[in-house]
Length: 312
Ligand code: 13P
Ligand code: SF4
Image 1 (tube, rainbow, N blue to C red):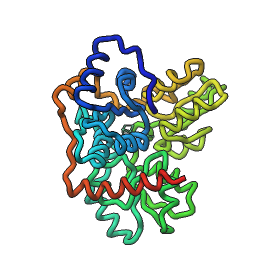
Image 2: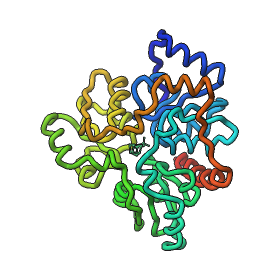
Image 3: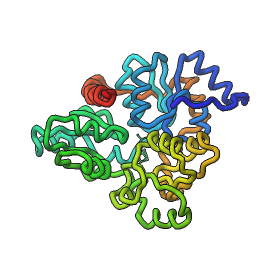
């Protein structure tokens, strides 16, 4: 969502603004990014919203503050633009749990079964899939497929969650997000006993026992909308701790508690600092480039997702 702009009177913020203007650049940031990165972003959001923004922008340069698969998606959608991930080592352990070769084996083992890849995958993996999905649209995407069986990869928790709501057999790869998957029912019980009035909301990357305890299950931006619209005052948050910053900023009178601040910390999402953004805008490096062969395959899967996602 478009961020309300912070007071941009300090030198660093002014420098970034100036560089953005001269470079015709846009800064996109995921909801888990550090507060100061969210504050300088033109747009913050979940994976689906960021993909949409990347598809729509007329900027010449996209500085992507997130992790590698997100910058790759932006590069797939914008071959003519410069896409920069200020810290290229910011990856996603879940995305690394499946390879293009694994995808080929799945396709051979389950001929004719559509393979739905979570956006948290490399472009090379996306290129081997039928269609992509995000945490915000998984059910809609899977339901739209004209097949009684689908295969979801790599997140088994997202697959098990989706399987609860679709009238199809959902086969799945055994991957997971180490951050969300580490949250246990005991952690949630502890947080609930400490904050008995709070609602508990969780991300579909959490394991099924944790999801069973949730009052609501949403993508990161879905969570932001839910807490803003809810008449309730207190919330326990079952996703990466970075989301607490926009939650508090948008709802200063409400209280937010992480379900486990130690476990729900993604080091990859915290790698980019303001200094890296300045350097990226100055040097226009390091660029995220996807080979044309992979790009064309990944683009098909991403575009199919965006077309279905945008249907009413
Ligand atoms: P969303 O923001 O799309 O819900 O994804 C969460 C996530 O783990 C991204 O890495
Ligand atoms: Fe990957 Fe999990 Fe970190 Fe998201 S929170 S980037 S899924 S490791």
